[in-house]
Amino acid sequence: MKKFALYIVLFISSLSYGQELNLPVFTQYLADNDFIISPTYAGIGDNLRIRANGLTQWVGIKNAPSNQALYADFRIANQTGVGISLYNDKNGNTRQKGVKMSFAHHIILDFKSRQYLSFGLSYNLNSFRIDTENFRGNDDMPIVDPNVRDDRSISNNNFDVGVLYRNKMFYFSFNANNILEKDIDAFTGIEPSKLLNFQGYAGYVIKSQSMSNTEFEPSVFYQRYNSDGRSSTDINLKYRKYNKAGDYYWIGGSYRFLNDQALKPLNLGPMAGIMKNNFYFAYSYQVTMNDLAPFNSGTHAITIGIDFLQGISDCPCTQGTSWTRYRNAGHN
Image (cartoon, rainbow, N blue to C red; front, side, top):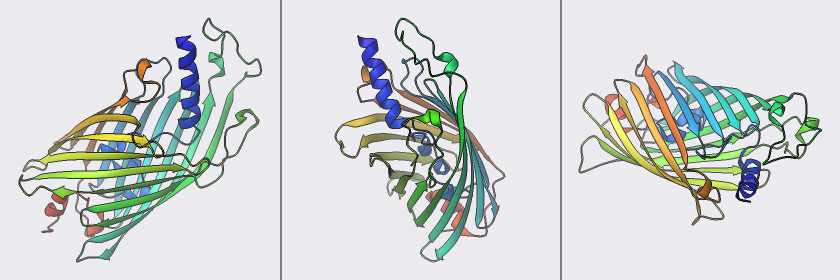
């Protein structure tokens, strides 16, 4: 009976969070890689930045979701950046593979007050497949739909658009993702064709007055699916400490909840990272707080990366939000 209840919970969760072209956003963006959230961040910061991310959700549950992704963005001119994202996602017997190619342009609104505006566009190519060869009866699930056979796969194209506003240490981005309706194939059944979702991300970098080379960064991430109105919010806090060479470490935490259940968190967990000689490593852990909590030990994510070909652009609009980057660029 316990296993049956687990299958029911997994089925409901997959309907809620496993829709095609709507891979869930966890806390990978907090690993100093805002490009995960929005194409508008392409080309901001070091000239070439590469991040690889591996995530395992609901550890302890067989066939639980897992994701591997590679992100790279770099500046191609003083005010322009491009990026690419590759991902492989597994959720039970479903598989997704895809690529995003992004373009961003950054402009100065006001040089003296350091106000910048960025525009971004991503082209998405996604392949979705059902592993029908795994649909065989067993003691736990003896009944299998005989109509599910042959290869079940489909590919889709879509676009994301976004805008980013920065004012000194404050930043706010807004994205509209999957703005085109999806092509529907016969096998998809009840799967929705409208995959539009909106994301907002805002934060502020606070320089410590009592501790040198130290900053705090509270941030909020909001996501809403247009088809059914469901939405969630992350509340995050990071502490970052630099040395004189520009290396740093950080620690933080994240609290995620559905917006109609703010006092009932979905996930809650710590995270930490370090940058040393342009090599980056970060780890995050999320404790599952919903009905799946008794069946798993949480969600784990690891990020590794490298920054190289560093070079300060002639345009301050491509400098990062960190106050240390501003200092290195000659700002007071």
